[in-house]
Length: 115
Image (cartoon, rainbow, N blue to C red):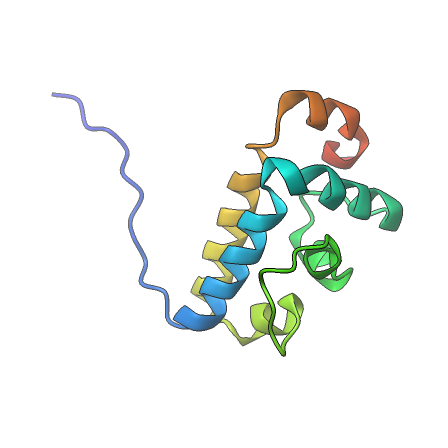
């Protein structure tokens, strides 16, 4: 008998903030927005896997994503989340950054490096 790994689901506590951040991340990683987002990170010298730095650089807001508007910045919304919600949104962000086209990832390989 083989048992497959199944990730436990954790209930999101702050649905509104989580949803807005999730939408901003999804917009940033759409094929038509991804290059602009990565260029923004490159100009700021921010590594793509450093989610805290991405938020503090306001890269999600400055990537030209007009459909996600809020009175709070992405950093402020992230800070308003509970610890488990923060972990889930970080995990979501990290999974989305791996969906970027391989050619675009190669073009911005410096951003994807660990060191």
